[in-house]
Structures are given as C-alpha cells and as structure tokens.
Amino acid sequence: MTAHVTQMKTAAETALAAEFVAAKAALPGTAAVGALRESAFAVIAEKGLPHRRVEHWHYTDLRSAMRDAKPLAGLPDAAALAAAKAAIVPHARPGLAKLVLLDGSFVPELSDLADLPQGVQVMPMAKALAEGNSEVIARLGALEVAQGDHALALNASFMSDGVVIVVAADAEVKAPLNLIHLRSNAATASFARSLVLVNAGAKFTLIEAYESTAGRAADVEAQLNDALEIVVGEGAEVEHVLLQQLPRATLALTTMTVDLAAQSAFNSFALVLGAGLSRRQLYVRYSGEHAKAGLRGASLLKDRQHADTTLIMDHAVPNGESRELFKHVLDGASTGVYQGKVIVRPHAQKTDGGMKSNALLLSDDATMNNKPELEIFADDVVCGHGATVGALDEDLLFYLMARGLPKAEAERLLIQAFVGEAIEFVSAEPLRDALNGHVDAWLSER
Image 1 (tube, rainbow, N blue to C red):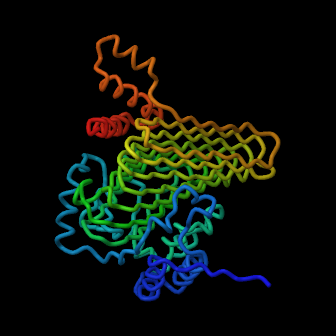
Image 2: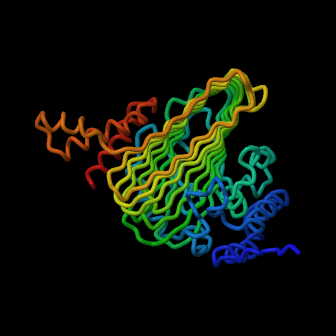
C-alpha cells in the first residue's frame, strides 16, 4: 500500500490562490490572455512556491522566505505620483528619454513619450493585453527553456501592466532608453511584464533602475515579481544595464528572457545593491547561428541580504558564443548565490561558452553558493566554467599599505578593481562611471 502525501499549503500560497480568484476578472486581457493566466497559475496551484527540494531553487527557499502574500498594488494615487515625480529627478538627463513604472503600473505623465528616440515606439502592456495584440501575446512566455519556471508563472498569473518597446529595423538608437521601476512606500505586491522587440539590424540600449520613492531606508515590506522579455532580431545589437537598489525590506524577483536571432549580439550588466532577498533569473536562447551574448553582473551585499543570480544559456543552434562573468562582494552575514547552466543541444556544433563566478568574502559570517554547470550534447565545442571564493589578498593589502595607504583605503581599491573587471564590459563610459559611482557609495557606507 502506497501512502499519498499532500503538501500543506502555506499562508502565502493560500492567499495567492484567493487573490487570483478574486482579481483575475479585473486584470487586463482578452480571453486568450485569461487562458494564459489560468495555465500559468496552474503551475503554482500544483507545485506551490519553490523550496529547497526544487533543484534550481535549492539555495533560495522562497516558500520559507515568503511568509505571506501582500495584496496586489492598485493604480497609484495622487500622493504616490507626487513622491514618484520627486524620485525621478536624479534620472533626468538631456537626451535620455525615460519610461516610468510605479508599483508595476505605467505612468505616462511621468514618462517622456513625446521625446522617444527615432525608431522607437512604446505602448503600455495593459493596453496591449486589453486589445489582444496578437504579436505581443504570442511572445509572452514563448521561450521554451523558461517555461514551467515558478517565478515567471506567478508573474504571468498576475501581470497587470508594463511596457512594450518596439525598435524599428535598422534603427541606430544612439541614446539609451531609461526604464525606471519605482516602488511606493506601501506593503503591496506588483507584477510588471515588459516586452522589447528589436527588429533586424537595429542597435539599442536599455537601462533599467529599481528604486523606492521612500529611498533605500524604507522599512515597509513590499514584494515585486517582474519579467522582461527581449527579442533580438537578425543582425541586431542590444545592450542592457540594470541597477537594483531597493530597500532591505523588499522581496524582489526579476526574470529576463532573451531570444537571439542569427548574427545578433546581446550584452547585459546588472549591479545589485538592494533588497533583503532578491533573485535575478536569466534565460537566453540561441535561435539563429553566429549569435553572441555576454551576461555580467556584480552583487554588493551586507548585513543579512540574500542575492541569487540564476541563468540558463540554451545553445540550440551551431556557432553560438556565450560569456558570463559575475562578481559577489559579501559583508556581514550576507549570502550570495550563483547558478549558471550552459546547455549545448545536439547539432549545436562550434559552440563557444565560458562562465566564471568570483566571490570576495569580507566577513567570516558571509556565505557564497556556486553551482556552475555544463550540459553538452554535441562533440565539437569549446566550453568551460570556473568559480572562486576568497578573501582580500593579504600580499596586495600589504603592498598598498607599505606605500602609505591606510588599510581601509587599500581594501577599497582592491574591491573597486575586483568589481570593475565586470563593469568594464559596459560599452558607454558615462554608464561605467555611474556604476562605479554606486560602488564607491556602497564602499563609503561600510
């Protein structure tokens, strides 16, 4: 006789199920979108929130960490809009158009829709869902390697708004587009979904920033689960830069999927400074030959912060090139997680993949979990991975201190150089300078 064990629902899982039943009719979308939502939530209803026994969530037990499910954020009120308007002032740059999301809702009055770069079109995701935009709906969740993912399924269930960005074929967009995700000082949950379609031959840079209108010191518990899907057309070049500096009370899940056509190139860098628990997921599929992708990032953590970077590079065709480099600087009792998998499908010959994770522990209480993987089903490939965890080099410290630098300044220089190795892959010097400035600010707070 075999006993069937039913897993008890947590308070968060029970609340999510009730919220879905209550909210789904009011969420934007046609019948096709509604069917997509139902299918997505079936993943959560069947599997629950991911936990340590789910292999690729082993180091980030969301079921234990997410003790409750916050109510869905509504449309921002006048006070929230006023706070958001003040918060975006530092992002104002001549020639740099911005798009603003507040608690997951697109805010046209705070966005630069009239000053978009030539060749770029933008529409709210809520509008695309409500109108049943077939091109948009067909792209949502279409990347096979990401299907079944818990976080993405939860996002698809509750997605309310976001942006759809379309870059015209052969457009050379010289100025970056700035997508600003703001959280108000409210204990709510938001589920933004955005789609970027970059047509053949175009060149485009997207900057994302995650912040709170109340600043990093805000102590209101908030939850966000955002997804960004990027489709890179044949011969197109896309660069993506992300800065995450949410308050420590925030639980932040973000997923990015990328579909690469032939001869295309995609480069991404993310600097993670905030949130108490964050998990950043990246799924990249090579759909056309001779495509290249570089994923880099740095996480600077202290106190009891937990930051997880999990990625899958899916080489489905021959002649693809992938590079991954992620840095972690861990102070206090913080925890870093890096899980990277490179899949080389049968017949994906001539794949060239390299993956590296480096962690710097500044405290005996800090923890780093590395899990690099190669899953190769072709025989003519060049793939490798490496992971290191260590403290600051005592010999280098002594060398700098022997030349008159105080110990704190010597440590600062070594940490800057360690993180800078990843930042150097960002192509634009102003962006590199801005990222290095945020690193400097973090070091000054130590």
